[in-house]
Image 1 (cartoon, rainbow, N blue to C red):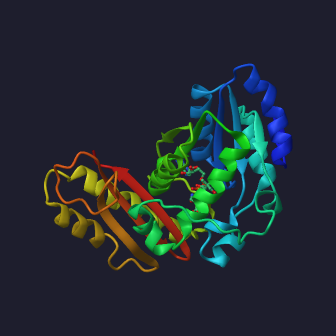
Image 2 (cartoon, rainbow, N blue to C red):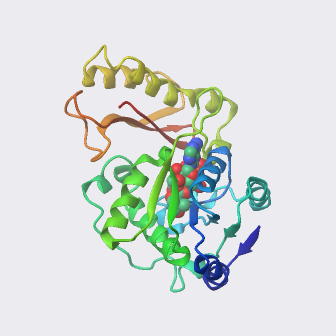
Length: 281
Ligand SMILES: Nc1ncnc2c1ncn2[C@@H]1O[C@H](COP(=O)(O)OP(=O)(O)OP(=O)(O)O)[C@@H](O)[C@H]1O
Ligand SMILES: CC(C)(CO)[C@@H](O)C(=O)[O-]
Ligand code: BAL
């Protein structure tokens, strides 16, 4: 497995591979890898010949400086996991490589109204930062396909909108959420959960599963009310939102007859903010 710290070195590696017709997949990550990330690598291997994983904790998408500072960075462990999974190359640039003029580089594109909903409401500007770095990663790799996890449901929508904005010829593949045996969605931030937080964290997947399982029994607002009740009286858990939304627009669902419905949740468990979702239909 090759390791690249500069765009130039990465491009030099990819050039002959592209010339010989190899299909390239990019798996963008912020590191602190777990089996959710490895599932993206495995799916990439089914869809391309050469897999590049990027590891970059992107400062411009963090709205909370403490969150950025304490983001886990176990790089040796990450490299071992990627080598084991058969990843071909790892791109791990420094901040200066991606933002030569500094991490305050200007960027603003129209991502549509969904930018301002849900995560966009709680992490203002987050998706401008995400699309800014993903565009830079796409420019560096020029992949045929790129893999993203459904766990960041809104992120996938925003990246597709960014692709449409720049008319980039890249196929986005959305990968299912990988969960711990008890239902908690794997996430790099789970490492921050105390033993008590870890127990409390199950409320996210349980409330989502409740809505999926009882979808035919109640109205949309009853389902949301019942799901939100799961969060009442749990010490140390603070619900940001629980919503049943249209999966294309992320606007609150108006009718149970809509085709593409998804339940999405974000909650603070102890001092760790977690997100999760389940597709209803
Ligand atoms: N449990 C999971 N199942 C499938 N894909 C996942 C999972 N967790 C993360 N991913 C995907 O991996 C990619 C990289 O995500 P990232 O490095 O931010 O990891 P993360 O675990 O989501 O961390 P965070 O704690 O920042 O949410 C994203 O496309 C994300 O959606
Ligand atoms: C896509 C991404 C790597 C951009 O920094 C990040 O938002 C993530 O890990 O989901
Ligand atoms: N996985 C999404 C990246 C973030 O939380 O900033």
